[in-house]
Structure formats: C-alpha cells, structure tokens
Length: 263
Image (tube, helix red, strand yellow):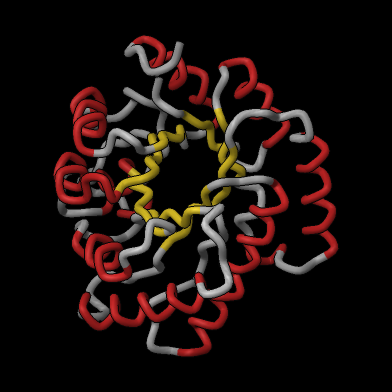
C-alpha cells in the first residue's frame, strides 16, 4: 500500500488525530516561519509538538522554512542564512523523529543560468551534508521553477541518496510551463516525495500568485488519475502527502480511498 501523509498546515493536534484515524503519516509544518528560529517561542512549540506526538507511531516528515532563501546564490550572506535555516530545520526534525525534510531551492526563474546555479547548489549541499548521517532525506520541492530541468540537474550533479525531489503537482500545474505528467516522466525515480493538491492552473485576468489555490483533490483541473498512474509507473517508491487547505483534507482523503490508495 502506498505510504501517504497529511500536511498539518500548523495544526498538528487536529491533523495528527486524523492521521491516526486513517493510519496515515504526518508532515509537520509548524516550524515554517523563519521568525521562530532560535527563540523561546520555538522551544515552546517544539515541546508542544513532542507532547502531542509522544504516542504517534506513524511516519513523520517536516517542512523547513523557505521564505527569502536561495541555496545556489552567488551571495555568500544569502547562502549562509540558507545554511543556518536548513541546519535549524534538521535539528528540529531530528528531535521530532522525522525521516524527511521538505525544502525549497529558492531559485528565481530567468535570473541565473542553470549550470552556474547548480554548481553553487552542489557546493552548498556538500557543506550541508558533511556532518550529517543518512537518517534524514532532504526533499527539494519545486515552487516557481518553470520546468523540471534545474532540479534534475541538481539531483544528478550532486548524486547523493540523501537528496531527492519533492514534486509538488499543484506548483507544477500553476507555475511551470511543463505539464505535471512531463515532470514525472523526466524526474522519474528522483522523485522521493509528492505534494498533492489541486488548482485551475493559469486563469486569464487573475494575478499569477493566486494560481496556487491548494484546493482539495478533484476540485481543480489536474488530471489526477493520469498523474497517479504515472507516479506509480515512474516513481513507485515516492511518499505522497496531501497538502490542500485543511477545509478540503477529509474530502481529499476520501478521493484517495475511492481510488484504492487508502484503505
């Protein structure tokens, strides 16, 4: 049976119960805000998570902060902040027993040649992993990337099993010039994790930042059954995580149940 998780959208108590009820893992998102880093509020939140999840026996992953970061930047100060942020996320993930951390590249389309950016990114990952074991896999999530090539080059160039792709099908549908199906066909088994949510892609007259609607499954126009079939064919080991707005999460669970992915 496919390994599936629910993204908690910072509501760990509510969603962990839903996970237990449906025998699903959880993606912890309560530490996404970089303002929490190294604060008393962070320590309090960490202790709250430990208490809520103390009897949680299902799989866990975590989403790292992602605002204003760029791991392939030529600016050493930006890379330093990105490194501090990822190390912070790694520490939290270790304490919570997470096996994966979802991160963003922070790449801005049309600002850098792919080859130079990827070279810098590989230097970043080399430094990041030099004192890390293999207990956590870093999953690079596409956000604003216009196609799959940059992430593909990054994964292939670094070539380490601790670094894989988190394919966000909603971001690919809303923000890229490549169909979700092509992302899957080009990235194949480099995909270790998938964010599932729906949207209507690019709508004429609507600002592009509103395209990423995070609707429930089958509430937009992604051909989900085709996407799921291709994921099973090209990325069979990938973990799936429902990342829609919480008001749609139970309906999305039911969609996966109706398709046989959740018992």
